[in-house]
Image (cartoon, rainbow, N blue to C red; front, side, top):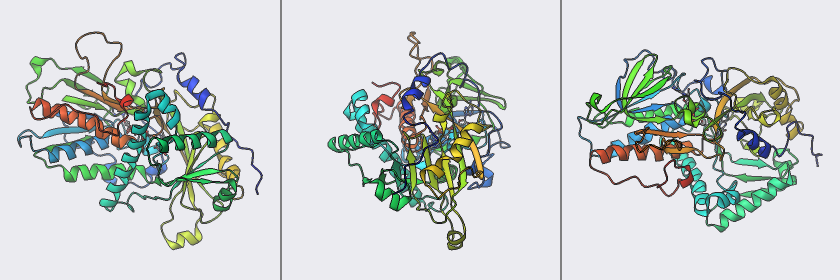
Length: 505
Ligand SMILES: Cc1cc2nc3c(=O)[nH]c(=O)nc-3n(C[C@H](O)[C@H](O)[C@H](O)COP(=O)(O)OP(=O)(O)OC[C@H]3O[C@@H](n4cnc5c(N)ncnc54)[C@H](O)[C@@H]3O)c2cc1C
């Protein structure tokens, strides 16, 4: 049995990170600016699904008037457009001369925020934190969180299969193994799984692995838990979702345009007298290319949300934090195609699939490894500059895999690529989903009428954003249909945690 190695990262850092995250004196101006224009290149940018979609809408005719303006072309914004198109394609209540016109705007190229720069994991871990979540938000909401993640992952994987996209997006459903570096984490996980099972949530195919089994199967001397899990090429998935939305939208019901490299710099109200459209235009969305008038706005800007919504700046809103990833080669061939996480989720990694038998025989697998923030003084919180990587953090991460899998990775080996990306954290770890609400506003008038938010995924967006976007798209669509006289008020689906909702009636 291999001796437990000395790990290069601190353990048990989550509590101190949370203290830094919620310290109102640290925030400064972080998060109030636009994304920097020159981000590092992520591995996911090396191969677009479709070259032309990266800078889509830059040279195309300007869209100056829409019903819905979605700000952000990451998984949240594009999923919202996808769900809206689905709702309006099915709903016959709209007359052909009033299709719902929608635009997506992004400050950068297509999908080059957190979604285009992340770790590529798509795994539901709704059991994780079940005990504390039940205590904080009640058992029904702990269950809803678990269902939300299952619903998101199942919906996305099913969609990928139905559309025959598995190869195009490199879907690998090879499972997920969480490695327990300390006994306390294993103990807590056992309590979480038991509580979730007890509450009626079927934690799917969980296997507890002893350190001997982990040593034999994976070559690491720590115990673990194995569950179903996936990894994929996130940006290709979002490009495919966008293409599907366009393909499916009947132009008499729903239209979608997109303008990349178009930052929204401000949003200003339109007075009632100025609005002449069927659906009342409420907002001017201002960009350096021009202004768009719109009835509804969806803020799908995650870490950058407080640039346009200043009341969300600070620990009561969304706090930016930089994550760092490297693509590094193993020093042995043939690693199991399993994804891993460890150390309260700070570290996460998986080997990329090899495409051909020749590759399998000759190549060493490339591993996508994220983490190391807990080794940095401020946990990389309040950092919004993803044009660079932190050198110290990089040195730490080069020692991580060689320590966890002795003999399978060469210590100090230079990664083939390294990049960073900006996450949006909330103090509860939960996203904000629903109408924009400013709790400090005591006036009777809704200052943000028609504006919605879906942001703050706190580093765990892939198994939540698609469904949260489904919920917020449902709210906007219902509002449009109520205004047209044809729908009941939106009611939350059974899988959305009620504490996510900005207005929980
Ligand atoms: C390094 C890293 C690793 C991660 N790994 C994982 C993982 O493995 N699994 C997982 O589940 N989650 C992971 N996450 C988190 C996950 O990527 C996010 O939660 C998710 O992608 C958020 O999606 P989004 O669409 O809400 O935001 P984003 O993808 O960030 O999209 C927001 C978009 O808004 C645009 N924007 C911002 N402001 C404006 C403006 N004013 N005008 C116009 N456009 C604007 C940005 O350019 C950006 O494209 C990781 C995140 C990072 C950074």
